[in-house]
Length: 73
Image (cartoon, rainbow, N blue to C red; front, side, top):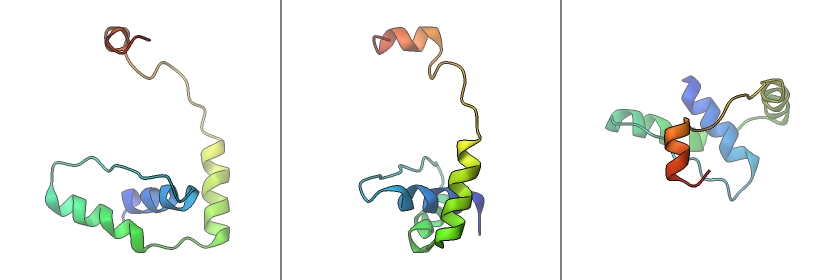
C-alpha cells in the first residue's frame, strides 16, 4: 500500500463527517487515493496511528504573513 492511501484511510476512520480532499494533478494518483476508501484499519492500527500522530509537534504559522493578510488573520 502507498503511504498517502494509508493516511487517507486514517482520516476516513476519524469521524464519518470528515472528508479529506486529496490534491493531485495526475488522474492515476486520484484513482490511487480513492482506493483508500477500501482500506479498513484494525482498532490496533488505528490506535497506533493516533498515538504516533499525537507525538508530532506542530509549530509555526499556517500561512506566511503576506498570505495571512489576505484572509484577515
